[in-house]
Structure formats: structure tokens, C-alpha cells
View 1 (cartoon, rainbow, N blue to C red):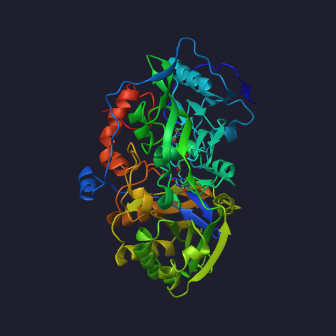
View 2 (cartoon, helix red, strand yellow):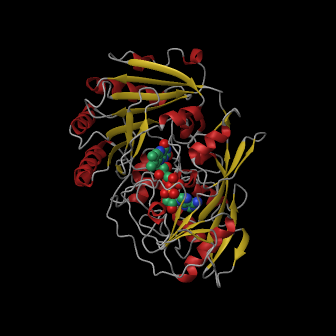
Length: 520
Ligand SMILES: Cc1cc2nc3c(=O)[nH]c(=O)nc-3n(C[C@H](O)[C@H](O)[C@H](O)COP(=O)(O)OP(=O)(O)OC[C@H]3O[C@@H](n4cnc5c(N)ncnc54)[C@H](O)[C@@H]3O)c2cc1C
């Protein structure tokens, strides 16, 4: 049974004991209905390597500006407010788990905050009682860092407000809003936003780490469109403060929130984002081939996609041979009319065996269709990586080899096109680092039967490791706790500045987890 608005006694913190795991997501092809899987690869990109690649950290904000606070909360006698779920609640089993059931923690209390005050109370309570604390929004963290055994999960998923300012083309959303809810709110407005494609993924986590998808070439990384945040930070010995960050106030924090990763500086309660005019319908297109055409199709895609018309975004997906009649799939969006699309797809459609389909939908409609997976696995593992130089034949041979010996059918190697608007940082800069890759990729595996666990993990790890020689860096929103040099891998030359901002806004490291940004 849920405990409403009641105080919960302090529980001594314990660290999560879960072993290293990853996660994965599945999408269903808009056009073929086949299950698509995504995964991650982990390689390291040192600062010197980043410099060689000419990556621009564009950090305009000023670390020396004082923290401007909106409100202060005293910690003495802090009480938990909001909707509380504890281990004795009937719904606890469901409430304690996130999207990826592979990560199984047992928090002592889950606090579903209803407003900013509840967040501040929960943060102050956790500090005063010495209870370990984690933050959760959409619950899709791919390393389980949104919850800790014995601690408090501060869950912002009830913060569902959405305010549209059509004149200025902005939206101010509570951090409990998920991607699908934002798209539903934008339906019919003529405005769009470049999120990823899975509807239940929370903006709470997505925006802080990046937000990559097929609209990125048109409108940039989602986090580049972040104009302002409200955040509750730890302050004083055990207190909390509410602060606002935009280009004029706490601007260094805004920079850090644009790609610095979730759970690092404080708890965001609202985001204001820039929207963009979008055509009422986009062209949703898909091309499939049999597995045997993989090398030719991929070579064509990796030569074409990085410099294609910026209104074109696409994904390249390979599923195990014999899973479907057409195991190689490129799905994309064109933000324009069919007439404007013309023969822009011809570098792909001319590859022998291509079957082409097109449809005309709003992006919101496409969201619903692409997420209709009827039987998703419960456990997932991904390895994210960025490709800066075209994959040679040897690398494609590795993909063929691993896809021919998958541990089950819920395996895939998935790539996302990159280019266009993502190459340029927004005004004020952004902690998002990987602007110059040709594309993003991830091998992924999902499973439900526990007897498959070790085989699935082994396949994913070996696949990611084999591709490491051809890729650089990793994506913080698809993290991997096995990466030792994760700071450089996720953040490259931005890592040092993120550490400085961490020291300023969270000098006591109240926000701490396995790969949280350390103090400078
Ligand atoms: C099925 C699936 C599909 C995906 N598709 C895409 C995609 O297309 N594009 C893409 O870019 N990524 C994608 N991802 C990755 C996704 O961006 C991350 O998993 C993201 O962190 C999820 O955010 P969340 O709020 O749902 O998760 P949560 O687990 O709630 O949060 C993720 C992290 O952010 C922190 N956090 C959450 N809310 C707050 C807050 N209010 N304040 C401070 N910290 C907070 C958490 O502590 C945690 O560390 C996908 C993931 C899955 C599982």
C-alpha cells in the first residue's frame, strides 16, 4: 500500500550491489514492423585525440559568476512530502524497477514528488538523515543509476506540466514529461522538437545527456535546444536551494546541463526548450535488403548519410539472419514533401535487393507506430560508440560475424546518422561533445530468460570490444560502467570544465554515483 505524505524513518545507505550491466531498447520499424534493437560500444577518446579531431568545446559561460539562488530550504527537521512508496507498499515491486529489469535495487523509499518544494524537502531529508539518494524521471537509465539499495529514489515522473509559447516557439515542461507526451502536446501546432524516438523515455534524463535522433540533423541535439532549467541543488550543510539557469544567470550550469549527463549537479524540475517549425507531415521512408546485401548497403549508407540533405535523418539496423525476410533496414525521416525528397535516396535505393516504402505522417504519429513492440525483453545491454572515419571492410566483416552468431533473436547492430545542425554548438555552448562523428552505433541484446544472461553479456561485450579499434568515445546516455576512462570517452575536452562546474554547484558531492562527474 502506498504511504501518502508520511514521514519515513532514516535508513542507513548502502551502495548498489548490482553487477555491471547494460541496457537496450527496441524499436519497431515504422514500415516493416520488424523489431529493431540498439546497443552501445565503448571506446576511449582522449583529449589529445579530440583535439586532433578538431572537436569544439565552445564554452562561453563564465565559471566565476556567483550562484544565483531563487529560494533556500532549511534542512533542520526536513520531512518527506509527496507520494511515498515503501517496501511495505503493495506497488513497491513495480515501483522500485525501471525500464531495464536487469538492474534490481531495493530503495527504502520512493518519493514521487509533486512539485519543486517536494524535491527540496526530499533532498534536504536525504542529506539530514544520511540516506543515499538517486533521481529518476522516465526510468530508462541504461546502467541502473536512478536507484540505489537502501536509499531514497526521488522520482520526478509526476511533474507533467507542459506550457507552450507558440509565439516564441518554446515549451516549458516539467521534468516528468516523456518524449511521447511532448510530441503529443506539439501535434497540430506546426512545431517540432528533436528528441529520440522512444515515447516512454523521459525528458528528465534525455535532455541532460544529449538526446539524439533522426531530427538531429535538422534541429540539433535535443540538449542544444535547452534554453533554461530550474534545478534544486544541495546547499549549506544539509539544505537545498532552488536555482534557475539560462544564458544570463548561472549560465555555466546551463552549459553543463546541455550534455553533461543526468544526476550530476542537482535535480532538475523544469526545462525550457526551443521548438522549431516543422512540416505538418514528414516523409517517413524505409528501405530493406536481405542480410546478404549488408556490406553493400552499409557502405552506401555510411558514404551518403553524413553529408546528406540536413532534412534527412536515418537509422541503419541489422538483425540476425533469418529473423525476417529483409534483415537489413534503413529507416528515416525527411522533413519536407515527397516532391522535395525527389531522388535524394537514390544512393541507397540503387543497391541491389532494395525494397522501398514511404508514408506521410506527423512525427508524433510516427512515434506511436515505431514503438509498438508487443513482446519486449526485460533485460537489455548496449554499448555505444561514435564512428569518426568510415568503417573499413574488416570492421563490417566483424559485424557480419557477430550477427551470424547472436545468442538469441533480440540482437541488433544499430546506427544513427549524424551531421547537419549537430556540427554547430548552440549559443552559449554545450557540454555535448561528439559533434563531428560520421555516425553513432551500438550493438544491443535483449533477453528475458535468466539462463541466457551470460551468453548475452558475453556476445555484447565481445562485439563492442571488437569494434573498438574502429570507433571513438561513447554516449553518456547509453553509458557503460566497464569503461575506465569514461570521462574522456563521454565528454572529451569538456570533462575538465564539467569538473569545475561540479565543484561549484555540488562541492560536497551530494550527487554521486558510479560515473558521476568528480570534483575538479
Ligand atoms: C528504450 C530506450 C530508447 C532510447 N532511445 C534513445 C534515443 O532515441 N535517443 C537518445 O538520445 N537516447 C535514447 N535512449 C537513452 C536515454 O537517453 C537515456 O536512457 C536517458 O537517460 C533516459 O532518461 P529517463 O529520464 O527515461 O531515465 P532515468 O533513469 O529516470 O534517468 C536517467 C539518468 O538521468 C538522471 N535524471 C533523471 N531525471 C533527472 C532530473 N530531473 N534531474 C537530474 N538528474 C536526473 C537519473 O538519475 C539517471 O542518472 C533510450 C533508452 C531506452 C531505454
